[in-house]
Length: 443
Image: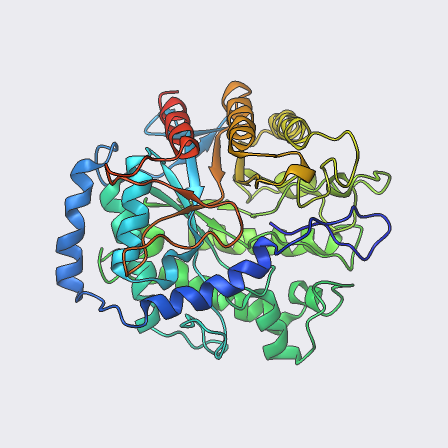
């Protein structure tokens, strides 16, 4: 999620305070510091210790079948597959204890799908890089993601793994542009430099090489290559890709067409998604998410033959769809229409739709005055997905315990915590989302 740009007259005013984008850069460094003194269990002991959580999982067994798409819906072993899920981006960087904590909580909430990052690019950025230099991959640093895939499988949880980031957290597109073109980052302005990520052959070749390394690597804990493991439901091309320098949307469309074809060839049994937010790209629309400001044409992207399902994100407060920016606007009602419109359009395209990120933070001026209003908004949105044929939804953000036993900080105001300690009451929001996940799983 990112707030709407403030430097363009066609864009709404962003919310005040830190954005999720800016806070993630802080969280990577903070989490690294928290785990610096934590001992990582040797592989054999870690694998043995992890299996205990599986018996408490609501899912029956380690995945042996791949999720597929048929007639615009997800299927698993011939039956409909719908889910309530979450995001926990940091699994690729943390200790086994932190991975266990987060995924055990996801299982306790009956969350069937978790989305996480599978990239960390460049050195000197406060995180252990998976790709410290172009075409160089740090095998030791891949321990966390290998273990997360193993642990998720033990719990019967499916994973969505993102391969790069539009934003500079964990390197992403900016790092590729720096490596190959040595240009300053302009991702908050015109994005002319940033958007060369999509067109420079040297950058595209490096991205493909990294994607191939991830997709075909052999997991040290499972013995399977990633593209052989049904635990990995989806490989996702990027987190929130956009190409602001090309309002027509052709630049991003061409890149997605090329990369979705490449990834599908490497992982024919797994699903391919884009990871975009659902911006419509209408040159005549004045409303930021419906307009062409970011160079994204959602319907055309979703219709590409090697894209298996469509994704949308939803942050009306940050997108300027709130009473502070637009008097009289109800962010929850605006978000409900955003969901239903995309569900209708996805059905016409013939693809499943996943609301793969969504969030409300408490801010009275933006229409969410307290926790009760926040919970009511989430209930409205997830009920809309359930009742109107959505394939799944993944709230931002499930976090759990860090290595000292405390909870991962609430960096952006969207944190959801499942506290299994009987002395502490689990939040109403977490209970609501857990109940919803059970409803989705039941059909």
